[in-house]
Amino acid sequence: MIFDKYMETMKQLRTYIITGATVMLLSSCSDFLDTAPKNAMSPGTTWKTETDAQKFAIGCYGGNDNSPGWEEGDYILYLDCASDFGYNNFEWEQYKLIGNGGMTPSGSVASFYNFEVIRRCNTFLEKIESIPFSDEKTKKDLIAQVRFIRAYRYFVMNWWYGGVPIIDIYNSAGEAQVPRETEANVKKFVDDELDAIIPDLNDEPAERGRIAKGAALALKMRSALYYGEYQRAQQAAESIISLHKYELEPTYDNLFKVSGQDSKEIILAVQYINSTKTLYTIGQMYNNADGGWSSIVPTQNLIDTYEMKDGLTKEESKHKGGADAYDPVHPFANRDPRMEMTVMYPGMDWNGGIINTLDKDINGKTNPNYPTAANNSSKTALTWRKYLDPLSQYAGGMWKTNACPIVFRYAEVLLSYAEAANELAGPSDKVYNKIDQVRNRAGMPSIDRAKYNTKEKLRELIRRERAVEFAGEGLRRADILRWKDSSGKMLAETVLNGTLNRISGSMNLAEKDPTKRAVVNVNASPSEIKIEDRTFKPFNRYNPIPQDDRSNNPKLEQNPGYAK
Image 1: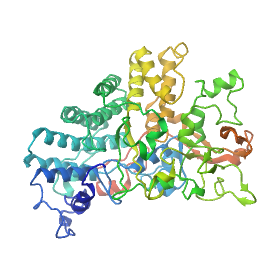
Image 2: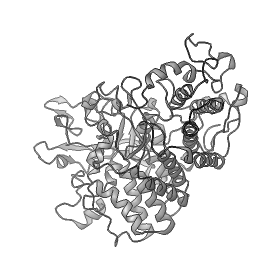
Image 3: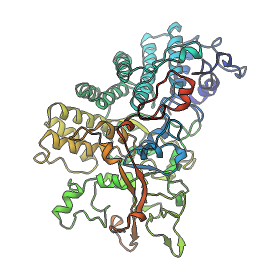
Image 4: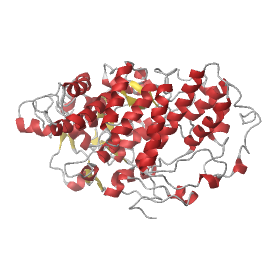
């Protein structure tokens, strides 16, 4: 189990680190430890030994239900709702307005703007210098882990907001009220931190969930790729491959099960433990009939992105024709195997029954999974399958799970290498081979090299491959922000402008082939299938700085396009 003494340590640290041992961002120094119990860890009784330092390092990783950890599983699972691949049904869950372009500084919008974890890291880095360690290498590794966490949080905020304050140790609320740095300066800070710590990190983590060299290289790779620094991205990917510590999981869907949490493909994941901190977001993904909320669901846009099982796009397949050609009436048939390992579609065998989101009534009774039957039914008629199958794997049920959402995995390394190398020099055997590893693992054919023989053509395939490989894993929004079309427009300006529709039709339950049980009504009226209108304007590249944070720090300037 990750962190052998995690539960004991977090009980001790909860008051000191998470609720206010150091000066909370923008809070008064007079509140320092006012409510600490007598047996709580405090500056006077801690920071004496190597064991103390190890405990406080864990505090930099972990959070609780009221305080963030270094990353949160719900952020990862919700993030595709901010893209064309996902939909968030309830505005109060804070991702709907990101997806449909309704973001405002004071609106119900998920905030990535949080310095609490950074504060913990800064305090750790200040205090650890005076602590003696029996082994200097252990001390350097621990410091590097915490510096990674701080760099990761800056990377996340910088990407979504485009420049944030860089805050070191401060002794008063006034010292924390500083203006935003430029996006370029924050990026340089992150890059410099990663380059500095990579040599000090162990090649392998001491326990699952700990940060090791591969994780820092993966963040370096992702940051470089996001900002179009292809040489740096390719080199980071090559360094991960050269570690020989990671490999693709033989079975794609096992990655997203409890049984697959020790997979060699996983470089870093957010840890949830039944006895300490559980992930409730899984319950928000299950469909209504199973007792879930259906508030995080995939869209038809994702289904349309999957290739056919022979490697043709659906448009190419429809044009070619034949018995296995794409049929819009049966859109789930003959598709990339990853589709049914990622999405629960109408007609799929599930939990001893058949998923039916198309028939309004079943045996004379209202179908609880019909899109308009209840608040908690999927409005797209689709449900995510990643992390949900099987429900029996969660001993505490869907609302108290030990699902561990993945942050970095080896498939991203292979596809990032391919994207970077193709952008630098076009197609090559190395590029094709990296992509084929990912495709072949999923049961898809190797790339037709005669067809995808130019940088532009291969770019199209790489983008599609990345889209379907990581669907539901929180990467899509960033990808459609950074990818440009031939005119230089963000892809988001195309895929997030228009009407989001649901699937409509009926079920043929006598059909033995699950992929053909859904009979889609291709002539459904627009009013019947409309979910919402979506807009995306160029200024939506960045989220608004939350108004509460600007009220606390008047020196924060709002992003262009949003109300001041």
